[in-house]
Image (cartoon, rainbow, N blue to C red; front, top):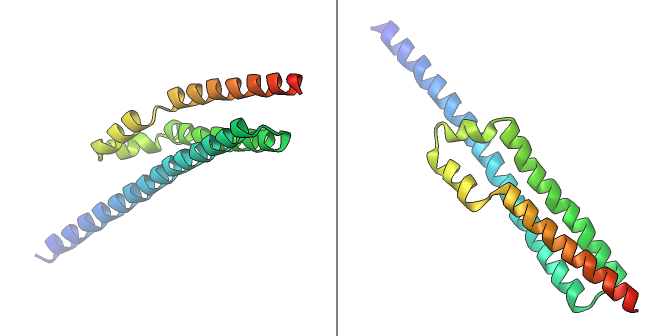
Length: 130
């Protein structure tokens, strides 16, 4: 009888440790996703400010923020390579749907690069006109 309680206690402890690790991984992924959304929102705001009133200072701020946004996407790609996301998806299928449906890193990155190129072209045109 005592052995059964010991086995049950060990089994429960292992399950709790596994759940804690999954929770930590989920928090890590959610933090990375939040930073992607934040950095791209800031970039959009700075881009709008630059388009409304172009200046070298504003263009510099857009470029700096663009680097931060690109870094945040790279952080997600690193988690994918480390299989952190896959580890969560093995046990939490909704996380897989969240990552696939709400964030397609390549699509987001390509769209932002197109946006960046348009801004660069506008900056060049405005500088030439001035």
